[in-house]
Image (cartoon, rainbow, N blue to C red):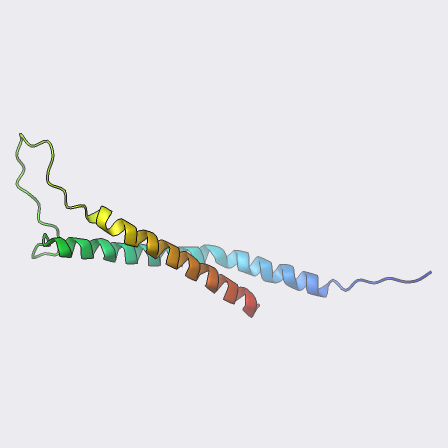
Length: 107
């Protein structure tokens, strides 16, 4: 009878690397989301600055409330920053995947 042996060392090494990668995912995801948040916040602030409504304390100047007004004039800070925010999110997600691939290759 012929003997047959299988070397499972590479297989075990793969699963160890995979487990290490999975363990790092939450930290990498958190860093990505913080970076996206910072960039999007910067975009909104730039929209506020471009509108000319930025006050001396770095805040948007507020109107004087009038009881008969049902709406105030909108300056669409978020809408103006939305297109750029979507681009930022895609860029950061792609960067996240590239870093994940690089980290996996190091293992």
